[in-house]
Image (cartoon, rainbow, N blue to C red; front, side, top):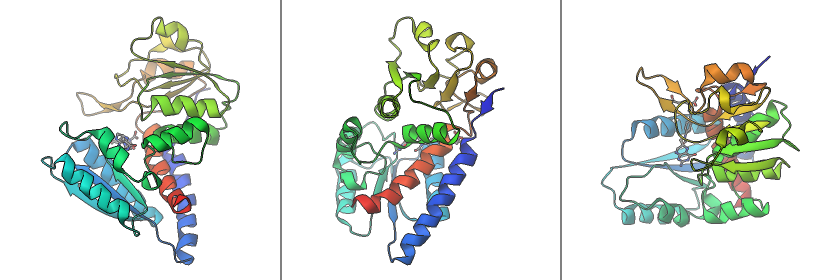
Length: 280
Ligand SMILES: Nc1nc2c(c(=O)[nH]1)N[C@@H](CN(C=O)c1ccc(C(=O)N[C@@H](CCC(=O)O)C(=O)O)cc1)CN2
């Protein structure tokens, strides 16, 4: 029978654990605060930023919201990041992506103090992941590892195939699976014979950014399928990169969209905020 991996439930468990930790830190006089910066009014970003603020409130983390207009210049944004880097009362800094086209995302990410980079996007934190150091790990891939572990799905020795090579998901995902002793193959939009490779996967992570791209033809019977995609269709309904109805019956476990990977991104962000106080 297929196990539907409930990201909403698991993320709630994690947030409850963090809430206790934050209360204990508060009792020692330590307060955690997260600066959340949004530039422009992309509707999806507004939902995600709102959910991040709600999660902070639930756990007991102070959130400082910076809602900047679309016309904000790169220099203005960099100056705000530099100011927040200096502030002793700010533990974490998050710049919601995507940024407007006139702002260089890499420049902004590199300007964030690496010890406040709770998104785990700074090159120094990515480097730590490569060498197995203690830096921050990107929240979505970290959340997927947590989903697998808390669902008692073994990674060690498994054939893990990742579709997608983005800096935020595909690349860190592959490194984390490797860290858990999986045998990892990275594939992408230019991979030849993709179906033949994905059919070998015991664990298939799909982050290709194309709605319902992965059908039953890509999946081995009994595989675990993790869907990172989020797309809104014509009827305003959400779907992932996986054609859930066709694929789910084949799998031993699968994440739904919504309610799978998405909520874990926010839970792991909260986890990184709690860790920030240890790393600083
Ligand atoms: N600075 C960052 N920007 C972006 C990140 C990130 O980790 N850091 N990731 C994504 C967006 N994202 C978080 O910011 C995110 C996406 C989706 C969800 C989520 O909970 N999705 C729900 C559905 C929500 C809906 O109704 O749309 C689900 O899948 O169940 C949380 C966070 C890009 N930008």
